[in-house]
Image (cartoon, rainbow, N blue to C red; front, side, top):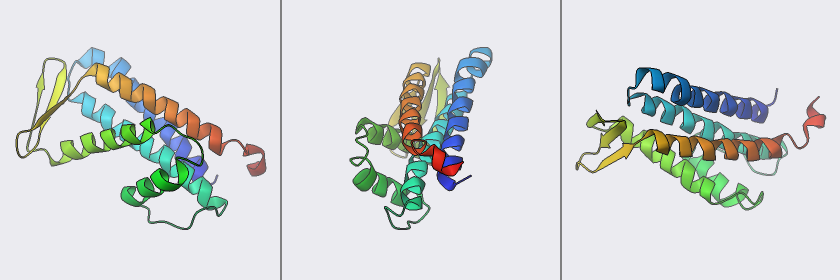
Length: 161
């Protein structure tokens, strides 16, 4: 299995985990802290899907080698890959929003649950909240992105059999 195939399969696995937590576990437990687990799995799914496209392009020698970190991958995805495959600019916004939310969570000095929302506060007490509806939208858009990437990388699947 090539790197791009493993990455897209990892993306599908992560989005299934996020969906399961949101649809099955959260209604039973009703703990808004689970929403951050959903957010992290969604971010990993998006990151794996983006990586899959980059590995696909690198496999066919259409792009040079790149550092295996999010910042470099996102830059190449944004400026070289997005327009080539006519992917929606909404995917850039989605990836950036989810990345910022995960980053804010990791750097947050204070976070708490309020009702069915999870609130993350930054150093200056700028608060940002996440709800179940927000996560459903993120997962829905992420599934579409993964589907679009999957159709690109499996377009020439017969070559790898």
